Amino acid sequence: MFGQAQLNAPILGLVENMSYFTPAELPDNKYYIFGKHGAQKLASEYDLPFLGEIPLVQSIREGGDMGVPMMMSDDEASKKAFMDLAREVESRVKV
Image (cartoon, rainbow, N blue to C red; front, side):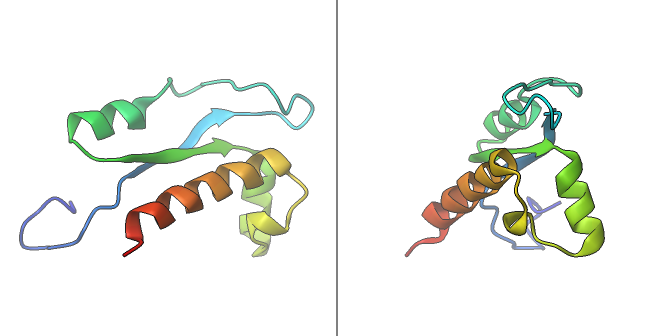
């Protein structure tokens, strides 16, 4: 959609949401239940930057339902994923 000339919207890159599942009791494990690195492949195919992966984690959903930002949670692994994404976006928009 954003690649259409008439829209004229800049594309910073692609983010893979629900990239992998990490259960709370095994925070170091990543289970790629929807496949692995699909957004990276798509970004490469369309010559776009890949910005990062956001895990499928229950605390992200719960925080969203309650209106509590992820950065206010105790889930350090998910907070890191969002911080990594924010740094990548920042590096692409700096003048």
